[in-house]
Image (cartoon, rainbow, N blue to C red; front, top):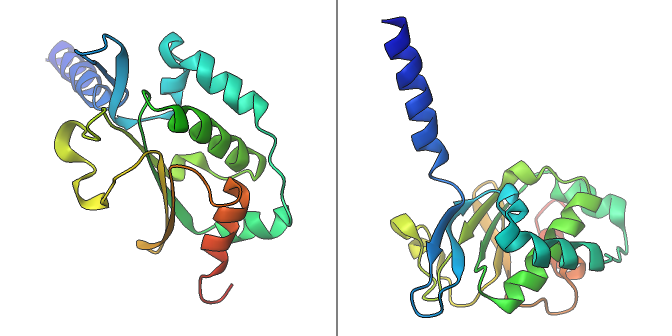
Length: 171
């Protein structure tokens, strides 16, 4: 009986683990894409690590008021919709993570969804998000959308983040 319980526990963990960092081969181009819910660890895979690490290391955030931005981010949840096939995603997503790391943001509060070239994911995860271009960074407070950065920032990622979250009442 104990052996059966151990087997079921391990088996269920494997099923749960498969929900993240799924890969799909793009049949037209033959390249491998991430699809569905992802974790940051997906970028450690050799298929994605080179461009992620290069852009992450290259980006150097410039903060007008880093302490204020850190404070404002405390209550913010973030959803990122990206495509590992998309050049803008390959540039902006690592830079976004670099900014958040420097601000000591708890990146476990990020929902990362990767889409295919048709901007679809398993389970239709983006259907209610109105995604037209990737990457799209959506910032929320108390489950209310505050704003988005779509494809490329208007100014810089840091300035756009600050503008979105500083509009919140009470800030």
